[in-house]
Image (cartoon, rainbow, N blue to C red; front, side):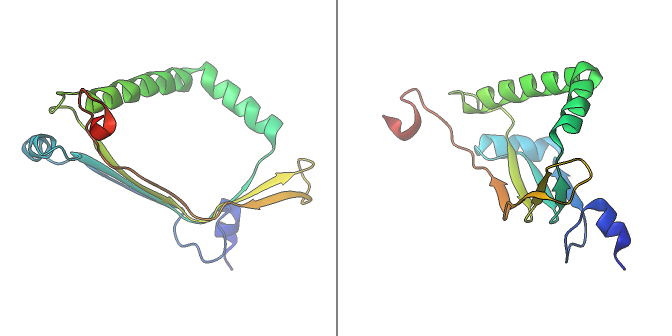
Length: 147
């Protein structure tokens, strides 16, 4: 019972590994949100409680392989775009800049750091509940807080 969940690393009581919602309304609604200095798109992500076994040498080999290829180029381009969008949103007079509302929650991930690759002995860390929520604040020429 629950064998498929055990293979995915889901912890007891978890129902779904990941739920993801991205809302990008029609351009008229997005323009109205921007004019009102509100976020015009939203991202909602829920990740159930998972168990992760982390073996550093194996993970670093995979990360290195991925970063050398197309994924690395995509990550670099995406990070650059995110920085540019963030700067435009925070810049004074950028009322037409897009902003995204984040609502991300990860339920109690359990991280296992084994002493050996196939060992059940090692360090265990329950990271508790992790949440990321943001708010939009416009800066003025005087800076945050008006001073």
